Amino acid sequence: MLFWSRIKVILGASLYLTAVACHSAKSNIDGSARDIGANANKTIIIAEEIANNPQENDNVHRANLIIDFQTKIIESASEIRTELHGVENTTPWWANTLRQISVAIIIVGIILLLWQTGIGLLIKKAFWAIGLFIPTRAMRSAEVDIKTQRDKNPLSFNETIAVRRTSDPAYEYARRKIKKEQGK
Image (cartoon, rainbow, N blue to C red; front, side, top):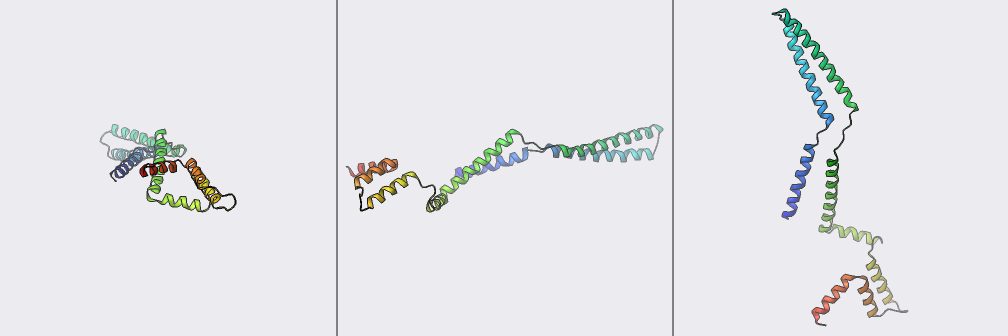
């Protein structure tokens, strides 16, 4: 139980760090462009205040230069935002690899969950009921049993056991263990 709780914590932390670390270049450019535009608007307002309250003639000239430069900055920011539509987000190779590993871990986790809860066996039984994915050992054993039951040319008990021993290694080891326990 402790193992699974540790796995959950590690997986959750990995997914959180991946999400936080992957910033989009497009959104960063967009944010910078908005900041440029906001700061440029503020400096225009300040420059207009200097121009409206001249103490010296030089301040008026400087204020007009500030206004011109800030207007150019606003135009550049607008161009950046227009060009953003041509930018495509790309995912780094390590993020793709991490995503693929995460998907594989999730798939393995689902399979383990199905196996441990018994739902996997239920699914296998459903397939077997419609005649799909029946193991070869089970098919061979069923064929032998049916031959044993036939009136015409039936197999002997020893032949049936021989077929099971050769087709199912687990049966052979189980048989050896039981014989050893019985002292035969």
